[in-house]
Image (tube, rainbow, N blue to C red):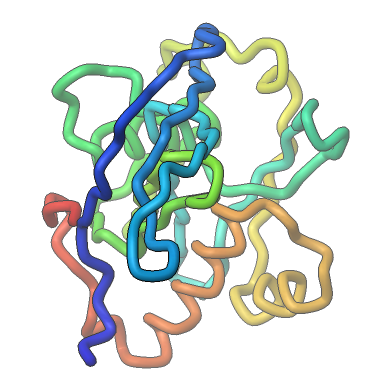
Length: 206
């Protein structure tokens, strides 16, 4: 059996929207699922989400760039990689990641590759995330960045962390953000193969 995720949609016989917010919706579907020799309509709740992108920057010294941000739902300051919503219609995903890297961390990258694709919590949400690897980096002076950091982004310390140390932080339970965990471990795996499995920055999503 080939180990490849494939699209599939089971029949929905009823659907309801319970909540519509600024970013997410909450709904439920009645989905026909196997039961014995037949099918049964089973209710499944889910969160609708526009999706996001992340950018993990790797410098010539083998360090990755992490930023720390307050996340209210989990009541934690989390070490993360620059990331943001897919909130500009028609914008290539790597361009969204490029914008987030500049706005949140103050860097530009000359080389971009697709690193990983994830469904963040597929049992409850349709949120889709693409993580990019950014290399050949250049710091951008603050006065050249047309973006005002406020709210959760008002005070985000930045750290350059040796990749091996970042991996250790994930495995020791010091780093919890799912996107950051994915990005750090994926960069480590990619480095171990000489980056030969990286996809183009415009690689299609499944």
